[in-house]
Each structure stands twice: as C-alpha cells, then as structure tokens.
Length: 162
Image (cartoon, rainbow, N blue to C red):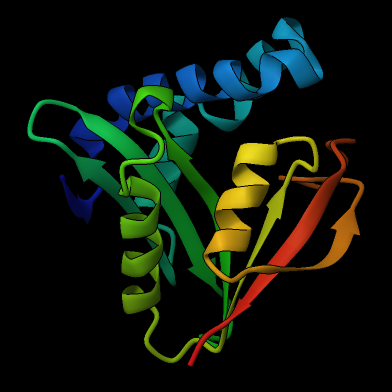
C-alpha cells in the first residue's frame, strides 16, 4: 500500500469507497435513506472533482496496486491549522495501517501546521478510538458536522503537531 495524490481518473472509485464506507458506518446511526442522501450530495463525483483543484488543500489516496482502499481530504486557510475534512478506509482494510499512512501524509503536506482539527460522529466508536490512539483530543462539539445546516452532531477533535 502506498499513498499518492488523487487524480480525476480516481474519482469514480473514490465515490464507491465513500458510499461503501458510509453505509457500513452510518446506516445504523442515520438510516439508509439519510446515508443515500448524504453520499449522493457530499460524495458525488462533481463535488470530489472540485477538491482536486481547491487551493491550499491535499486530496490523497492509499493504493494497493489493485484498488484504492482509503482516502483523505484536508485543507488550510492560514497554513497553521489543518482541517481534515475526510479520512475514510474501506471496512475490509481497516486496522491495516492505511488510516495512519493518510494522517502521516497530511502532516507532511502542510509543514507549517501546528494543529489538525476534525469532526467525528460521537457514536462512530471505531473512528473515535482511531483518532484517540493517534493522539487527538476532544476540544468541542458541533451541531452541524460536515457543512452548515447539516443537523448532524459531532465531536471536534484536535491534534497538536510538533
């Protein structure tokens, strides 16, 4: 497995990864219909395509040589704080190091950064445990995870960087 920059030719596969991962993680939390609605808007190929050229951002994937098994998207406004918008790993690959590889790459991509911030659904215990193992600490809560007005509550986690 290696990390590389996402490209336009990857977008359909990244979309499938996100849909699969979201259904695996969130069907029991939000219900299938809500997950379909979210993945149909937040993870649509045109939305993903815009991220490829977003200034001050990184869109990376973990590639096995046969498939993309994980992805991450992060951005910064000031170079000091990284907002980790997405980090998803296919269910069958979780626990094999892909998530850690993505976090390491994001840190390298923003060398001036002092902190990483992210939002995570409180009941997504796998993700909460993963981020806590990586040194993230809870710093707050939001009523609108992902985008303004989403109505999806989440924890806010941060990691101080050396």
